[in-house]
Image (cartoon, rainbow, N blue to C red; front, side):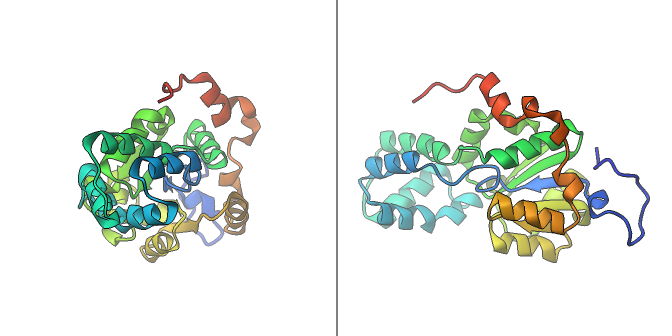
Length: 248
């Protein structure tokens, strides 16, 4: 379902929100909070690396992992080789799980907004740069991801943002013109690449700035969707009701 505004209004006076058929979210740092420091400390402990060395090796091959050039297993072997260490099977299995924990703290304001959109019948989807094992892990851990109409995980397409083709493929999968998509991402280069294709794109840096930019772009009605529903429909209330995975 498209955003509930009258259709066939093509004049310049049409509301910007009326042109949005799908709200497309990035996952990491938009729907998820910043990396969990507890999980990061566990990674340091397992690898024996200090923060700086782990950070350098973790990110060195991340884009290759995200675009499917490396599997999860190959990624962690590459991380180990870059850092000058070796990792056994048990350590890599543990790192798979902790990498999921690192990225599964919800950014509550954004996930609650997505939930309000969904309850209002507004189409929502995800386009995320993400590797195979972490994608599998977050889907298994976060039941609320199933409420999105489509989740496009970059590794499955063997491409990644900001490559133009990934936005085109996503729009095709949604059967929606690029110009009728609102895309939200935390990385400026991804936002700029989407905007160059005609997507309405917003750079997410904080929820305060996001709120301000949405209103400045004439999207206040979209932003305020479902506020009258009250706290009972919020993600925090939903999480309290849903069974959570057992602690590891």
